[in-house]
Image 1 (cartoon, rainbow, N blue to C red):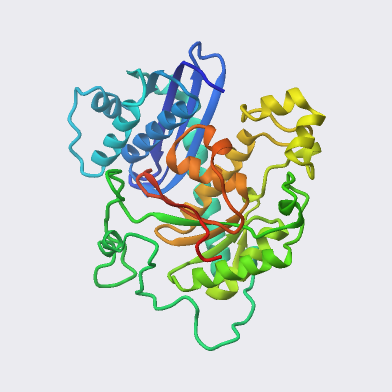
Image 2: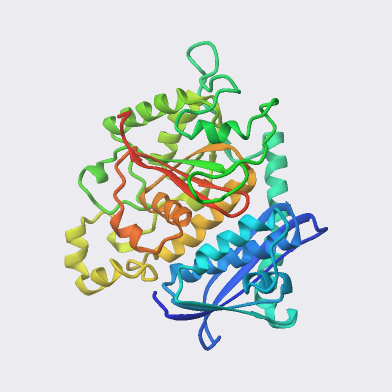
Length: 407
């Protein structure tokens, strides 16, 4: 979907200031008659002002993804509206990078206006922010369950040699900018100090780094057929690819967890990595592949021949599902929810995420804050590795795409 004019309403709050915080953002059409998109996220413990800026950033990013060129921002935060309008100076150190990130997004539109509205007129975004803050209880329950060993996880197979494959705790993984990460490790290696993101992003804090590993080969991938929920097993080559990827990851160390799609081809690939890293596998349903419905098992040509008009439209419209299946927009919603869970559960840590083409592309799309064209233009090989980072201040970066050097 592409729209020219939109209204962004955003809000944020914390229960305690600082306290458990979250934001909400809703994007309306120009008549404020139709909701085009919603965003919400639990942020952990922070202040009202940080949450309000994060809501603004999420709303602007969503507007950009919709292709909007003219944006009217409405918020009940006098501080954010006045600062973004240039009438008040941004003085607080925590606000400066957030305001700068918002300005970078503003620069991508033809025109952006800011308007203060009373809280009662911002009820939709306020509701989303409160729903995000309500997520704090769920995150706490999951963490408590993890400590008690009650999470939905599969234990790694026993090591066949002495010692842990993770390497020394103080060792920094070699796939990242070690100079940047060194700023976050001062004295005690468990203390996360403030650091900055790569290049000119201006992101601050230590990111949750997602190592995005596509599963190995299956019979359907050999034949280049739509493979969604059909759940084919790995081939012999697929198992070898999984083993090679696992061996590569094991040489890097400092990986906190392996998280997988529930489908067997991903779980088997994840299990190989978990065994090499000596960590359990956590299963997240949101990381499963797109449901291709009646196109499951068909080749591109067969699907196009079966439903020529629909297939052609589907290739350019992420809101359109395959017959009996799932749209890419729907996939994005659940992948975004999984991303929020991962950032909340593993703040500042490295996590291997084993999934499929569409979820991995979607995570890269979220990190880059680009439109849906990436889904149709980016190629990901079997058992390839990509890396996306998500910072606590809302920034993100992509470190690597489609590495297969270890295969």
